[in-house]
Image (cartoon, rainbow, N blue to C red):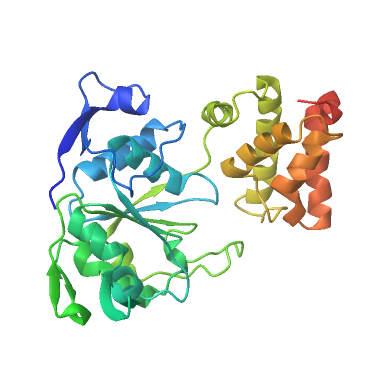
Length: 318
């Protein structure tokens, strides 16, 4: 199936500083149901550059995005795709997932058994993006089944009478994970598995960390525009302290086992407005956003940090 392509100006499409006339290829049709929903988003130029370069020319590679939880790995790909009208097949991996679930399987439809193509087959056939979320939770022996198609080899579906799918020129594979394929040495991400070296060798790898304070402030304000900037800045300060205690140092483990991701930060701000007018609203919202799942001592420590940072604002109404 051929889809009409379209050129997009990078600066105006993504709201970043870019060389005048710099364009990227996307698609003209914005009606496909698999195009992600476009949301307000602040793109980090260095990450956007790497993703657009990969979309322009995959060169037989996949792209692996690694980084801490809630840093924006999947949302980065989805929001790029949303602006380029690029359909996405997204899968959340787990330890029991088999390659057959990605390729397709026979299902009972209206009393008859029919083969239904899976997200990998559809993406390869139609030129969509395939996103393997939490890919390092999946059995490495199963993921190794993607090696050939990552290099541009046809996908042969023996179960469907030997059907052969030649990868579409616009087919791309993204994988995300909290590790970079070498397992989790921190013990914080349960279920993460060391991945097959031959599989990882087929990926470009980029690290998606938490945004710097300037960009993260824009992210929060774009998501919760009615929140006063003064309060957002204090929330950012709390997040910075929590992350510092979570990450620890090169020599010592972190003192916290939970962290405040960008996603959690936005949730805290949003809940603070949702419960506006309630007593101790920032404390209450922070508990729902993060600390209710922390150990009691850690919960107390995080709230003490927040109270110190907020000062008189801690018991005020936003």
